[in-house]
Length: 283
Image 1 (cartoon, rainbow, N blue to C red):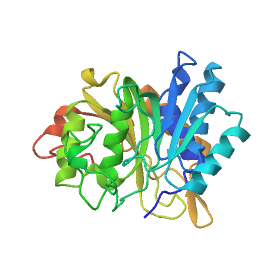
Image 2 (cartoon, rainbow, N blue to C red):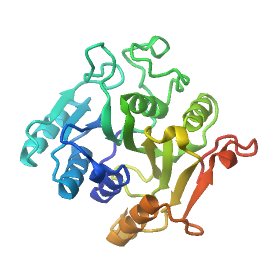
Image 3 (cartoon, rainbow, N blue to C red):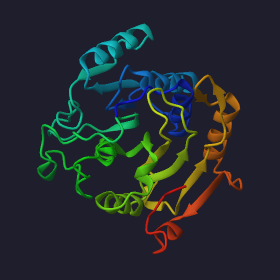
Image 4 (spheres, one colour):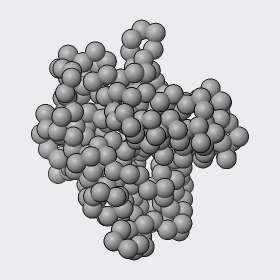
């Protein structure tokens, strides 16, 4: 179970739903802690530049040496030569730190991390984490999905926005993950959940979703906007693909918060926290 190549269509959705098109300053930053060859970083950068003219700073970290080298090359080829790409394990050895040794924080974060990583805690002790990432709970030893999510939340500024691809299991699994999910939802960090069609990603047919994160308006959040976009796609050989109309429908519904029966709904926090749901976010 590794990191799966992010289709360009999914990258477009992620770039648009986190609001990079509303960037206010060229000093704002975009980070991908598991950047692969850099496609998500570049898509977010291009979305911001095409809509605002601003050339936002890019920061990426990638564990695989050859892939990190490819990301650096991609940054140069796509006219982003000042992007910082670092090769190392993001969870065990995060590179981007502030002057106090804490994690550097960013305006926007995008990520498609390795799903269900069984060795996520290799090289460090989560119970005594130097960066305070696991105050909501320690993820299961054999599943790192929430480890990456907690890392990303720690990397977001207090006004930060994020879009992260997850397996559907993060929405409803129990145990330690349920405890962490409850704390994240209570704090209002999740703005939305977008369920994607199956079989979009190369290397897996596992259904995935995008968690849209928003710290800036977390304190006032009264619900989570949920979209079930699993039926909007076209067949392309043995894979599925999002069409332009599918992308437009997702982004339009999300940005305008439009409720469409059977497709999208603002689910009140009270309904999510009700004992019969107990913070289960299953679409």
